[in-house]
Image 1 (cartoon, helix red, strand yellow):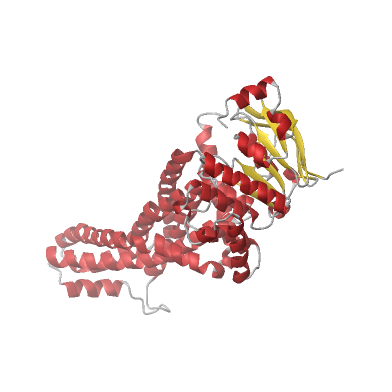
Image 2 (cartoon, rainbow over the protein chains, first blue to last red):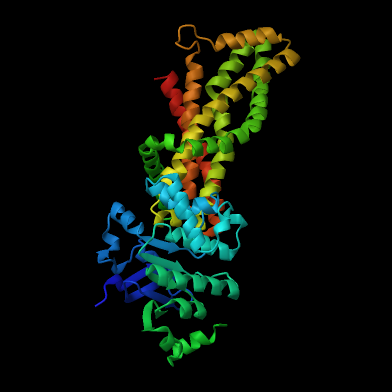
Length: 246
Length: 262
């Protein structure tokens, strides 16, 4: 039986009077990429922030590699995060650092690596996301697609075992989106990371995810492999997918 | 929550956060040598780019003090004391206070806006998920930079203020520039001290270090707590300037009391 890396069990989260997650449960096996879809405001990004310990659930359990994230000490959480990567919707690049320095930041701040070694690793990651020429550029000089690539390179710089992607296609045109999707699929196959992928776009989920979880009303409505999910006759999924231009 | 109680709780939360941040900065001072380049950049951004403002404001403050006191002193034939009064006013109060106010309006607001923008655009969250110490990366260098820059700018403000007072003394109060400068220099000399400067100068510089720390700390704290997009950044910037000026005035009173009354 495959090892469970991420597990959410009856997770409840409210912001003020609004209940965003209402007893959500699912798990992700090692090496698996779980795509999470659902209408806006159903708490997809909130799920990712629970997994990486940015917010705590009001009730329920969030486990990563068998450890309750909410009960980890600051030091333990920090150690866990160093083994995880997170791609933010807008990339969240530090705007006063160049692309190279952005990608190098976790290594410079958290390791004793020599400068030459850091440069070598950063160059390899920029090569991996196919922007080796962008090292000296500032975030303000980058297109949306390039920001995403830099964000991916930074998320992968520590060779994480778990990667969380928050809408990697957001704000991108279809052509660039597909390039990003192909890149994520390739990375997933080459690096065998465990991943959670939050995305609205059908094409992204179809290309990258091994399984699709549909969130509705703060709960998991269905979980199916992509081919079955997109062929599903479930009225809510048909309605949701019918609105997608892809 | 009670409408009257809410501002008190908000104030207490803000103060508590700033005190906690001050402690966190103190614990990271061992990293100052490793951050020397960032601190130097911050000194350039925060201080050197406000030099012209300090020069203009300091010059006119010195001129105002000379004119206000000179007119009254001339009535009792004591206008030759203008140099002493301007020099001591600038060194004790006007220099540190005016410099700190300028820094609150320029560097403090800029720190709140920069860090606030990082907060609302998920950059701070990104630092957190990358396990990067935000205090060490963002706050400590800014606090140390202003703790260094504020006294340097204060010396500049004091000096230009005394010079400005001299222009007014000579042109409008019939006090020779030489006499004015002699009395000003005498007032700022204490042969008994290790460095031949009086307590007024040391006290003023000590104040400016404290004010520099206050401005940076409040600016960074406001930025770190910003939320809610551009409106949140605007609120953070406004509160950083307002709170820093209030804190400077209150702290000024207590330092003055400790130096001259206690």
